[in-house]
Length: 363
Image 1 (tube, one colour):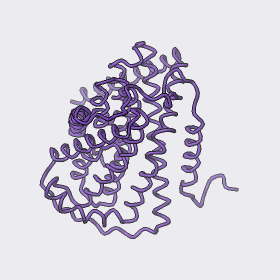
Image 2 (cartoon, helix red, strand yellow):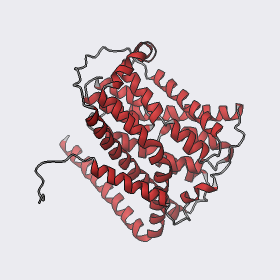
Image 3 (cartoon, helix red, strand yellow):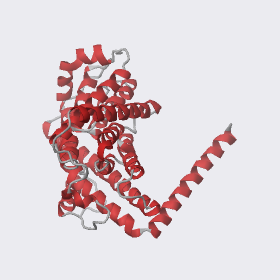
Image 4 (tube, helix red, strand yellow):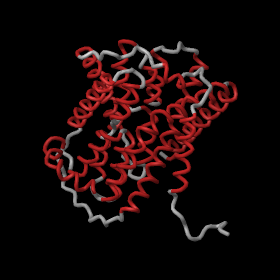
């Protein structure tokens, strides 16, 4: 038995070393492609992610730390218990995930577990249902920014949230009473500061995953030389990261609604990595999480396709707008907005770090 475990570990270590070595060689062979991928990722972060997600992340953290989330959960507790089999605290987390987007749901679940307001098993079930794209990203980023139509964003949002509710019904289980410890009152000033720090850290982690996925997509293009709007390139980018995947899918013509809806439901490996990082302390991810993501993707893609057929938006574009030309591989310029937003984010992150009295190099 021990020999098999050691052999498996050696095999895993060998595969990781081989993969790292292959990536290192690719970076040496295609430095320009890697640079273009980083520039594209910066544009996505500066023009889509930071403006649409940062306020919701701060609001989510404040609601949890100030105790307002627990009061809000009492309103939805009867509905969640009878229909979905969740407690009232879980109801508020699902609501926040629908309003704030992918990282907010995971952050809400982790915060509830840290304060012992839900059980670990309920946290696992809740996490499978709290992976949703926010309305700001779907309507503003995808609908207006990528498809050129507010109506298209609204249809995508309706399909996405409906698929999320159906997925929640599939995860239903009898509600188990859970006795939570009384949470100490947190001063409003501390709640705001802690929320800013947590939101900045989460968003920096998210932007890092976007940069990594965008670099991987550029290296993939350099190796395979696929056409700019091919289906395989679209699927590869969507599996890696949802923002770049939806941008590629926006040019897929009649398949665009299905592909975008499926990518929003799946979330992308970058979002899964962020969720794993936020909830790593509680070990919530399992095979059922991946199964729920695939179900959400199938339902979201199908509903989006049907809604676009039944209620075709008047101004939906078949390709990404020219105003988003900074996302394309050939553009080597980085927008000033993206750089300024990232610089301000880094400064805010440093300012919100806790100040210790005994620093090594204090004068």
